[in-house]
Image (cartoon, rainbow, N blue to C red):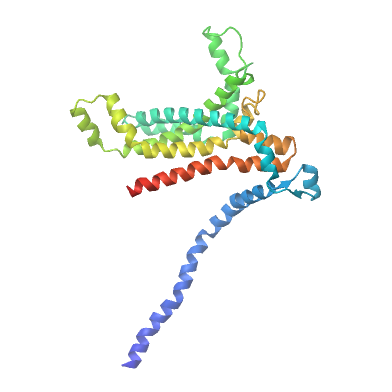
Length: 311
């Protein structure tokens, strides 16, 4: 009998010994992704924060003689009026883009929430601006708004609205409006996709009950659709803010931060400090400060979401 017990327990011990191998094998599958994220995100972030603690003009950087100055770069930048001007432009640009992106995305989501022939084909075509490379999209908008041969000037002059070409990207207010339009046009399909998923999760019975009570389309939209879309709307706003607040390529291609400082957002300011003025430490400092607002918003969002889940 003891021999039988030993024989029965032997496979169990062998299985127990093999478990750690199976356990560690799980990490082998995610190791490439972890390495990729560490190499492309975590290490650049660490290096940027580290560089912001040094006085690193390009001459000293190339010579390897940069000096550690601690938080002196941060104190200097926080006293720099250009930083606060760039922050103001960044917030105006970001908030205006998110508002326009949300309105367009919600309108498209409501439109595509209905069944009609060719809905999937039209929805795929509407989604093209989001999958286009931002460099291509920015160049398209720069061509459309060009003062000499742009499509907008040609159309407005053809119908007699303007008598002479307008250099839209050469004037402060119109340049800022132009980059807002270009960014919102790119991001609206993304907002549409999330909001459409939210609309499809709203029970149809709520609309039917509201109709029986005499509620019209506007009332149903205001009392049912918007409140139930609130969680999705917060996600759209947060992700839109994070993307838009750090946008560089669209603005750089269209205006390069001009005219003057009209479209000089914080990423453009950081680029100018690092690669125009060749003050790498100052550029890294501005890049690090740019992380503060999106991080704080993300923390508030997760905290609010946790409270809603608890309730």
